[in-house]
Image 1: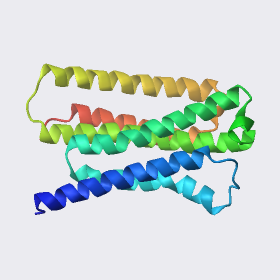
Image 2 (image 1 turned 180 degrees about the horizontal axis):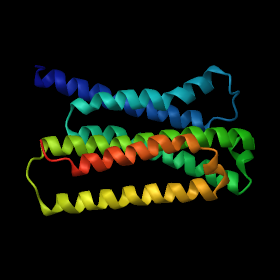
Image 3 (image 1 turned 135 degrees about the vertical axis):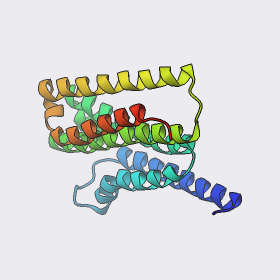
Length: 194
């Protein structure tokens, strides 16, 4: 078993790696247009995947460490998806340095990462929370009820958007991690305590 100082060092390294990668990701998003075959685009494309792997390593730690590592990546990818969505629908994607086709590609990428990271963050946190916090409280029931309500809103809202909105129709592959994430989260909530 690891000593406490080694464990704290591992946690600190994972936090630093996570937030540095997230800052690099935001900086790359703010850069002007770059070619989709350039090394910068390849880094940009795979950086959320690297963040996902780093964040998954935090599953060995306590639930709040896992949450504080995974949630920022989910929030950033959701915000980037929203920025591109608004720019595309207002016809100002060129202000972001993108063509309409590039905006669709970036939206599909960010939407996929946003769905995956948000639902993984939620499911992992619930599993870890149930393992470390044994006592049942009223707050816990309220929290789980809110999580289930949020998941139902995400599932129904995504289904409506996939049918009604042009940009969301282009991200149909994202429905798999989205629905899988909803199912995993519901299983995490209804699963009995360890």
